[in-house]
Image (tube, rainbow, N blue to C red; front, side, top):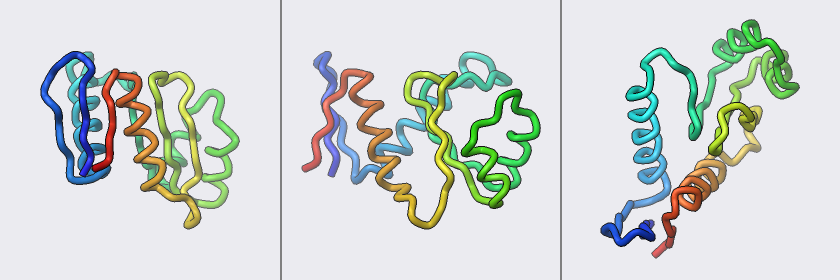
Length: 123
């Protein structure tokens, strides 16, 4: 069980595991995105897994594609794009079999909670 404690005195929130917390955070961020501008791709906090065919499209339209994006296109592999408070400088990781996606999601959730003044406790 994951316990989230807001520092502002709001009620404590419980999640079954990090996958549940991840789903909650992505839902919150997607709702924020839609509230801003439905067609706007600006995202401060996002965790996106692009399938190989989408990576190819991103690469084709990117003004300055990253090295990892190029490698993902060349190898026909998925790409993970992680934004941690700054959508202008996402972290991009080629999704190979040795990448621990659950660890990346957990770290992203903890970073999100820390940024938003939420204490995370496993219990």
